[in-house]
Image 1 (cartoon, rainbow over the protein chains, first blue to last red):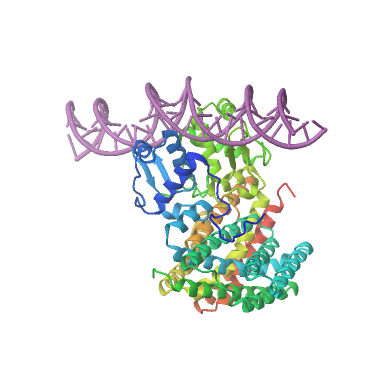
Image 2 (image 1 turned 120 degrees about the horizontal axis):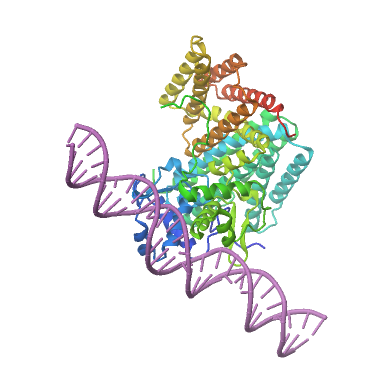
Length: 263
Length: 263
DNA sequence: ACTATCAGTTTGTCTGATAAAGCTGTGCGA
DNA sequence: TCGCACAGCTTTATCAGACAAACTGATAGT
């Protein structure tokens, strides 16, 4: 089942794009986020795109439709197809997210994503603690037990342990979010999570090493605080503990990215 | 500029869809959310859609592409075009949101949206209080002053006052969110806000009356508590006050919807 | 200065033909 | 009997070309 590597090549949740059209969509999407055309500016005419990309007009048109559906383009007869202002883009769409991540400005995106998590997850912890059903409480206990077990198992190979640490960590957060029972929240989190995963992965590759597990102990203790408060039905306590946890992740990420280029 | 009515006919942020294609996209989108085809089931073949909708094959294909870009459909040669599971739909996309709202299950959607607000906005208040720049603090003060002025001005015609009350209320929340300086958060909120607006509007129409201003005093006092804590840089206080505020809105909405059909 | 009109540009829509992908049943061989 | 290669069928994918419609900007007439 598992691929044997924890390297993610693509952000999950994306639309499957096969064939010629898939290539055209990705190319166009990448060209747009790259800033090849300014916001509000017209892109190449259909006829020109046909030549540039060596595909038929129908493929060009369908690709443009897809990008338009994501808020990135807008066509009008005789005026051409224009790049929409970024504020109109579906920034939370996995495809848009991936193009942006690959196009650069990873630091800004990372900050934005982590900030979003910092804003949302404490509230999630609060609401989950108050509203969890018995089933949800049981699921949380399982997730915590699994996380704890992996943490304690020092016999595991370093790499496998690291992978399982991340997996059980994600599952812990997912279980908490699941307790709130909101489709919108589930989806929101899955996009944030996938984007962070890709971002962090690219980051690690760029630095040419697999991050070690420094800070694991603190992280584990902080998760325990969240879990304990959750079980004790202490919503405010869970909220505070979660805030500390995310804040620490942000500090770590900041340190990690500090070595990088921009800013 | 203003239309003279505060009735919203369409959710803001939607892709502009003109012409024949626009009609086809909306029809197909509506048919999908209506459950005409089960999740995972194949929809009509291209050739059949051409007949059903009386449009050309290119229009059908472009419409399908747009819906696919929103995660609602997926096409494969020889297997047909299938409705994707709801979890794959871009639920936060304004178009998808509008189709869902119009298709029914308004109560479930309203609950989900309000729950999302309840989870997010206290965290927003917390982060905004900590991170606001001087400019953001000034903007908040303006927003609060405007809200206060409208509230105090009992000379305004009832209808106008109500409208301005809602406007200044929204602006208050927008100013707070702006203080966090996150594009993703801005966009997330704008979708939630637009959806709630449409939902509440349809609700009021359904009940055939314009909601009066009962509860305005309490609402105003709660906003004041948020503002005061924000100004005093009391992040936890702002968070708590915001939570009370949203919770009350939820209770009100629940009362309002209680008269309705389902559940 | 203003308006109606016309020519030109670009996307929108329709049609038909062919390619490619994927499913399904058939029959051959072990 | 089981499994597998293959052929035929279904459906979407891609290409090509023609004409329609929407909009722009220039121009001519008042």
